Length: 388
Ligand SMILES: *Cc1c(COP(=O)(O)O)cnc(C)c1O
Image (cartoon, rainbow, N blue to C red):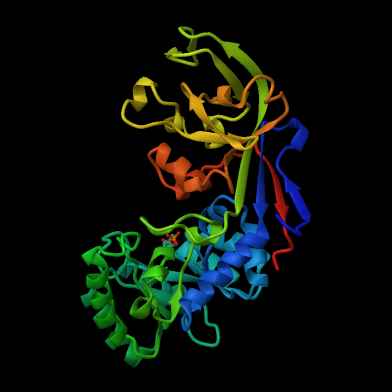
């Protein structure tokens, strides 16, 4: 948080909350600049769906716009409406497509552009889309292997030839989405790139976009004209097997409510995990209701037979989770810190600069995306940095 200052606190007051989130907008901006440089000569857009990956749509979008980002992607139309209030002039694309005629009116009113994913999206947008400088602007998504959303290649070809005559739509972007970009050596990447190169020839006047965060690290031809980073902006490691070059954006901490001593042979938490040795336990005031997943529970817990649990970080040391994570409380083993090292009111880092979010996610059998987007509403949140 070097040089930053607090611009905004949200959520419950810090002294009444079980945990606090410190969201470093300078780190977010640095990550955007880093990804923009890696994307060059392509332009970097930003994906801010799911409330800016859980970090707060408004501060995140303002900071990114301040860093020069002009194009934004959300998943849902209501997210687009919220973003339009924050950024009156940005280009906003809605990834999940159109939600029928009634929703199209909201797209018109708020100048949202659908990512056209299906025949029904096409028909509705042709009938109800808005006219900007050009009629009915949109992105066209063509599936190249996800089988999630997107037109088939054949449908896209038909659209391209019809539209060349009618000019009913103005495709601003033609896009597809990579299934395996987090595994750089996966053969699917090359296959999807080849399919997408064929798609691009259908829309020769239109900018193209293929890469999410991980795709940017594939570089070269993958970059196309526009990239769509999400997780890497927020500090998550996009690519497996390499050191994460992004700066951490979120520091999540829990307040210690109590410190207690238990003897070998006693047990902890639900399901009574036995303690193998005398243990000093720091009881932290966050749990799975705050998005500290129950699957991060400690080693020796029956439901975690095969994997060690997560660890926190406190006073310069790692502290493993003990027993089951509960709704509002999590137990940390601070024995190694020694007597009286931890006091009530101290904070344990759940993830952040000292405890990488990807490590905690892995311990919980999930990914950083899920830890961020399930951050609970009970944290006190502080936004630091001037976002510049
Ligand atoms: C969510 C999403 C992105 C961003 O992905 P990250 O892995 O978070 O960078 C890009 N494109 C599409 C279509 C998405 O759904």
